[in-house]
Image (cartoon, rainbow over all chains, first blue to last red; front, side):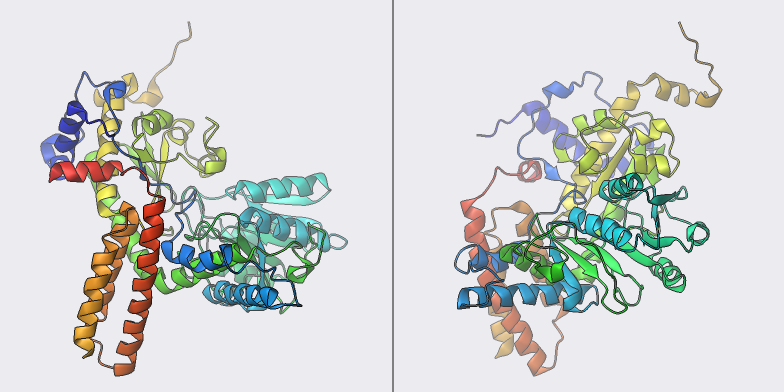
Amino acid sequence: MYRYCAKLRSLLSQNISPTRYYSVSSLDNPVIDKNYSISDEVIVGRPLYMDAQATTPLDPRVLDAMLPYLTSYYGNPHSRTHAYGWESEAAVEKSRAQVASIIGADPKEIIFTSGATECNNIAVKGVARFYSSKKKHIITTQTEHKCVLDSCRALEAEGFKVTYLPVGTNGIISLEDLDKAITPETSLVSIMAVNNEIGVKQPVAEIGRLCKQKKVFFHTDAAQAVGKVPIDVNAMNIDLMSISGHKVYGPKGVGALYVRRRPRVRVEPIQSGGGQERGIRSGTVPTPLSVGIGEACAISEREMEYDHAWMEKLSKRLMDQIFGTLSHVIRNGDPVHSYPGCINLSFAFVEGESLLMALKDVALSSGSACTSASLEPSYVLRAIGADEDLAHSSIRFGFGRFTTIEEVDYTAQKCIQHVARLREMSPLWEMIQEGVDLKTIKWSQH
Amino acid sequence: MSKRQALQLYKSLISESKKFPSYNFRQYALRRIRDSFRENRNLGDEDVIRNKLEEAARSLETIKKQVIIGQLYSTDKLVIEHVMSQKK
């Protein structure tokens, strides 16, 4: 079933020893097989998964909690007249409490939705529309997820004014800018907690304090933050928050929206129907999925410290190997105020797509999954002021609870090998080696 | 009594976890079990110990079920598994 290629075997056994890359003589100049051809490489086995920001695998413990509701207990949680309904309702309410617990909320403040995109739509459009008679301005950032930016575009078409705050080169917004942007017209500030592409953490608590002081609602897209970094809606003065199931080792197709009750935040529902979920999100709550997100949150709450320590260990290991061997590698985003499970690196003089193709035995991405089909450089990287060429050469490494040290070592070594190989082919790299400053070159056109 | 019980549970948890067909789930389970037992090695309170052991017994049941499901829907081995078996 598996084809073993002698060449690959020798290649792998050669490259697998990490010490090789630490030796001083090989610094910046790992031995490169000049006759290397990517097509000769036969991949044996499935690629490693290093794209935890796109989605995470379903934790077996979560599946175990969900299975009874996918098989035996199929009642509609809104059926009030029989035991089938009651047992499903009890399960949904238990998961509501589990989701509430991880963010320090009251279970009544949790609304189950189909995912973080729907949460963001309800929060941004819902608040803006509900308060539109008095306030017609909202504030967000340039590095938000597409669904927040797109909701804002839709609101602009409805006559709202939207401020897209710039971010610094570290990816973090300036509180002064935010302070200046808030007007008496402003109804909502929507700023994500952890960025999906560069892993940068925004100062959520400070933003919350400022918004409370200015009496503006604060929504945060915490899809990449919940279960990974501590979040408390009361300590951080968060009024609305979006949570995704499949980013915390839960099932896809479910999310949870936190909507503050005291002081009450009103939103105009997008979907009309039976009035489930306090009328904010009509439609039958999918019992197995809500049980899944609840159990996933409960596990993440319990395991947060343990998992976070593991992420730190893995990211340090990856960066030590890459930065210890390769030069001209830039980490995008703030190195301190970021989530260690998401590392975005730009390899100068290497085209990101070529590197992704070469690393076909590792499932990686250059940015968000939503935009991975286009060759355009990421708008997040452009917002942090990355040069066009560096924005084109970025790779996002996403680790999760199930990532092993061996996988990280393999990825680092493969990455180093292919970056070195691709640079060897680049005339720009040759010039850099000869000491030419590329910025001084006058490119002539023919 | 509880020490022998704990050792027995530990052994069953490890041997059952080794049956996970998925490399990532298997490695995680082994790492998590070893770390938990190491973390709780010096527990003194009888009630706490009893709670932890009950939790471990529930985990064992979950692992047994999930191993079966993993076997029903297993995939090809990962590239890293081939690399590591070659190294041996």
